[in-house]
Length: 40
Image (cartoon, rainbow, N blue to C red):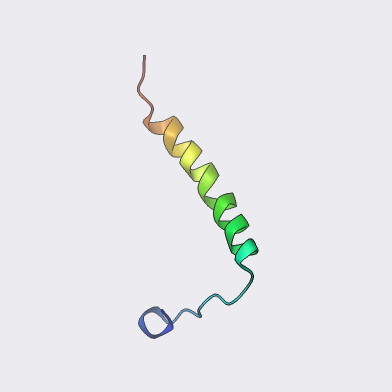
């Protein structure tokens, strides 16, 4: 990843990574669900 994009590889806690991933993706998924729901 660092070679291709120049980003550092994440070396922190797996628990923190899991919580941050949930905190970002759950609201986005809920919003996408609300926007794309069938009307009627």
